[in-house]
Image 1 (cartoon, helix red, strand yellow):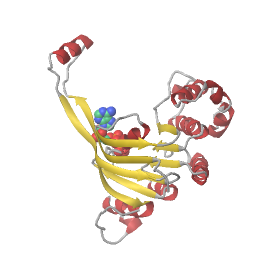
Image 2 (cartoon, rainbow, N blue to C red):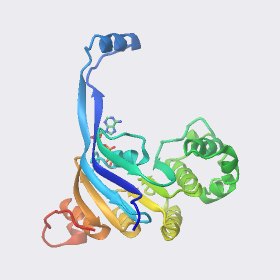
Image 3 (cartoon, rainbow, N blue to C red):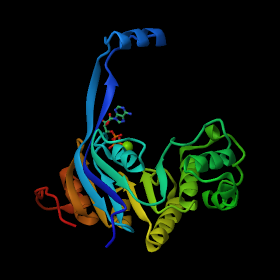
Image 4 (cartoon, protein in one colour):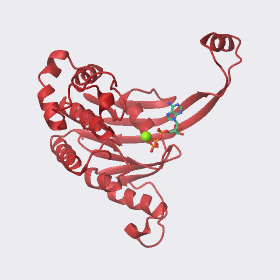
Length: 263
Ligand SMILES: Nc1ncnc2c1ncn2[C@@H]1O[C@H](COP(=O)(O)OP(=O)(O)OP(=O)(O)O)[C@@H](O)[C@H]1O
Ligand SMILES: [Mg+2]
């Protein structure tokens, strides 16, 4: 087995939030900053996370709202740099596909395809060869020349998924983007993800759709308050998580002790 596609070594990420309220102007901000009168609140979003994902594997990332899942993906994409530790990504990357990220509301769907492609480091010429395929997959032919502020959430998600999965990437990072599509689009997405898996693409999937995590992913990480609560085969981790949130109908039985399950 070669080097992992994604490797986190003892990664921590702290966000800094300005705790001051009532700063009304940039001038005031500069003055306070220069006179060190600014106070910050620090929020630890991820704490000492170590995870490796082998090439061609699919990792699900689950946990409550605010657990640190999107932060985890942004670190993998290099959008954020760890406060401590090292986050390594190997391979040609598609960015985090997160709703609202990398799209401009005033641009048309077609313009956004190029804009998004540029953010991915793909040339205009390369994107031009893929536009038709993207529009067809997203089933947005009738809307592609309208500004995307006129799109529904699901339509934006279709476009985002179609762009990211049409440029050829070795690592795909998906943040909750499948959940907003309708049933038939979800099926198409699942088929495409399956073919990517067959082709050896590494997938990181953040989702509250535990069924999707179970069916798409080999392994899963369960984050809680920025800590890894469990890591192991997707079905086991999903079952542990379900039990902990009281989803007894699915799992049944006693609450299992939570541990890091070796992969
Ligand atoms: N840009 C930011 N600045 C400050 N704090 C942030 C920022 N983004 C996230 N956080 C905080 O970091 C923590 C983890 O957030 P994150 O977005 O990673 O959670 P999540 O697991 O993706 O949640 P959700 O299921 O709601 O998408 C939260 O407490 C959140 O408030
Ligand atoms: Mg999130």
